[in-house]
Image (cartoon, rainbow, N blue to C red; front, top):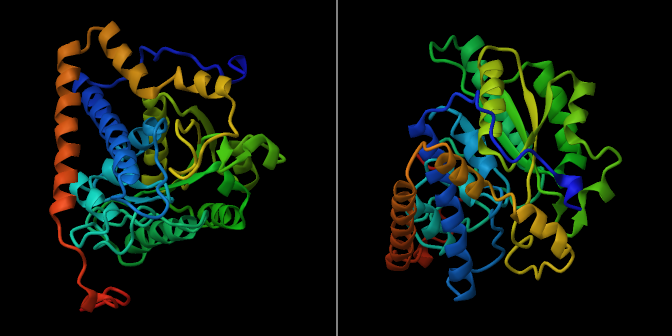
Length: 342
C-alpha cells in the first residue's frame, strides 16, 4: 500500500517562495488543523449538532489554492467547508459561531457546518449535496467575464476556485460545467480534492477512469495531477492556473491527491479504511512536511514556528469563547433571511 501512494518527500529548490510567504502558508494550515481539532472537541461535548465534516489532512489543498488568489476572487466549497472559509479570510470567530448556531455566525446561525457563507469575502458557501457548488461557481466565473466584456469593467478579471471531491467527479454537473467553462473560456479553476474515498466508497471502485485529471482532455482544458500533501506544489500549479484564467485563456482542472485523517464525518466510526493505508498517508502530513522543510533549510527557527502555533491556539480558543458568549437567533426571526431584503 505504501509503495502505491508514494510521492517525493522533499520540495524542489526552484520554488520561488519567500520566507514570509512560507510562514504564512504554515500559519494558515495550522489554523485549519487547530480549528478542526477544536470542532471535534466541541462536537463531542454537545456544543455542535448535525453533521460535521472535518478537513484534517487536506490543509495543503485549501492553503495552496486559496492563498494564491486575490481578495476579490471567489471560492466555492463543499460540505467540508470550514477550512476553505478560514483560508479565504472569514474569521475563526464567525465560523465557530456559525457552527454553534449563533446569531453572530457568518450565516447568522442558520446554516451550520455545511453552509458557511460570506459575501464580504466572496466565499460562495458550502453545500450539503455533492456537485451543488459547481454550477454556482461556474455562474460566478460567468459574471466575471460578463462584467469585463459586456459592462466594460476596468477591474481585472476575478477568478473562481471551485472545490469538490472525487465522488463528485462522476456527477453530471461536473461534466456539464467543464463543457460550459471551456466553451465560454470562463476564469475558473476546478479543484478536485481526491481524498481517495467518497464516504465509504473507495474511488478506484467507483470510477471507470480513476485519473480524474484525464477527464479534462475531452473538453479541451488542461488537466493537472498534483501531490495534495505538498502545499508548495499545489501553490505552484494554482498560480499558473490563475494566470491562465485571468488572462482570458479559460479554465483548468487540478486533481490534488490527498487524504482525510478522520472519518467522513464525526459520526463516522471510520472502520472501512485499513490501518496500513491510514498510516501511510498520515506519515506524509502536509503540515509536518512544510515544518521540516523550513527547519532543515534554516528558513525559520523552531522557536518562531512554535510562536506561530501558540498564536493560532489562542485565536481558536478565543473563537470558542466568542461563540459561547454569542446570542442565539431570536425565534421571531425564524423566517428572516429566506428572501433577499433591501
